[in-house]
Image (cartoon, rainbow, N blue to C red; front, top):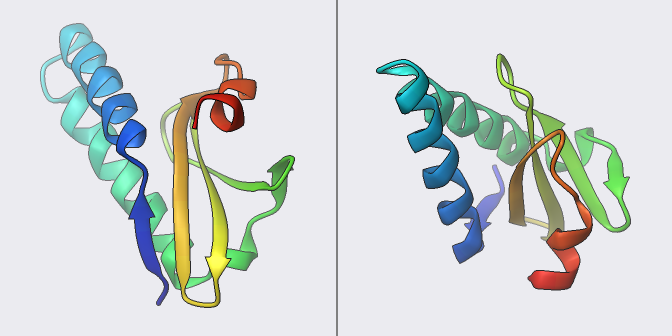
Length: 98
């Protein structure tokens, strides 16, 4: 299992989206975070299983929600998560801002 490193901005992305989902329906934000956690665990189990989607970053879809986790395999057993983005968000900001 690979070590996962979340960039600081990722936690902000997740919190913002979790809060938005909780405003829509109580408990939905918690489900959102659970799905992200499951997604990241699957990435840690087999980081190279998911395709390169944006320049140098791989992406894996999050189950149930229209989001993806963008990450890069940095070392053999280390993965850096760069973003958790809604499919309508501009992925260009991942590499330019981080």
